[in-house]
Amino acid sequence: MTKIVLPSGHVVYDPRGQITVAPVTPTRRPASLEATRIGILNNSKWNASKLLRHVVAQLEVVHSFTSVQHYSKTSFSSPADGALFDQIAKEVDVVITAIGD
Image 1 (cartoon, rainbow, N blue to C red):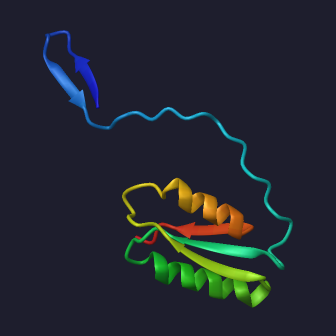
Image 2: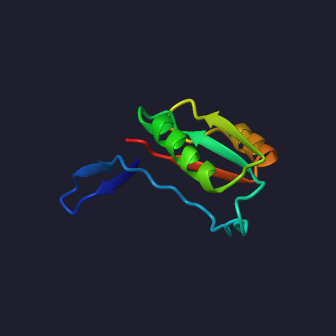
């Protein structure tokens, strides 16, 4: 929360917060999805699972995956925990996620 003092002397608190992040270079995308291990990250919103199942079904029509692993966040309102990201990075080559509102 950021404290702002107006010229009148009144204090206003901005509830939006601020996040400082360092830039990162995205991982290289594979040339093809053939024979890749796919990870599906469900953000736990109501329609995310349905949307992701449909996406996987459509992709499987044209690609042969080595495996499809499913993961879920505990809450859509907070980031996934670092241990989950580490697990996903070890187990799959590509991750697909969706909002599902």
